[in-house]
Length: 242
Image (cartoon, helix red, strand yellow):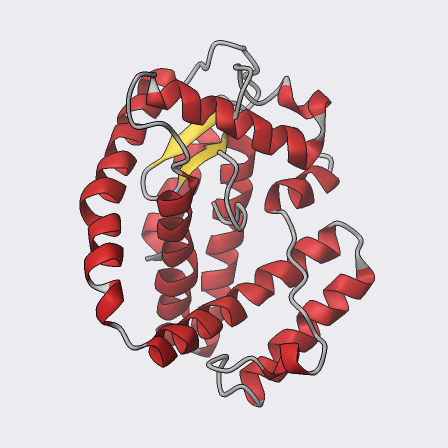
């Protein structure tokens, strides 16, 4: 698993991160990746959700959803901290502590019951707070739309997270990678595919959708460094991971 992460990081670092051309310089790579992801959503993810999902009991769905949200609370802690939101950072940390213990590993959400509501944070906005400008538009398999700078930063973060957890437990590190990182990617793919089904260049529409996401996260100035197009993937529930 570490080898895969290192290889992906090396690939991202090799991509021309400084390129800011308005003609989508990586389009020859991005379009096949978009087609792959769309096929994955249409033929694997959606059928599983639509045909298997209804058979899963409601309490089980709720418990699994709570557990997943609790694990992603770590991202909310980091994102809020990067944005300088001390109160939100403290609340997110408290939610994770309460739900991980009293909530039995996050299966239940007692934190919300005592007024510790979830404080969502935007990963794109968090990255902008570090002073990094978005790089060229990039579509990754299993992940979807991103940009070269954001993808490189996320890859390094995932690698560091998995590496650190591996010292505690290899099983824990593996579960974190599969449930949080890959699971989050699958969720983003299913919901970020906010494009028409016919009549337009679906790739171009999603690429433009990503511009709106960047504009909303970092402001209009950052958009010039990200990609072309007048419209824009807003990640529902945002874009996390992505």
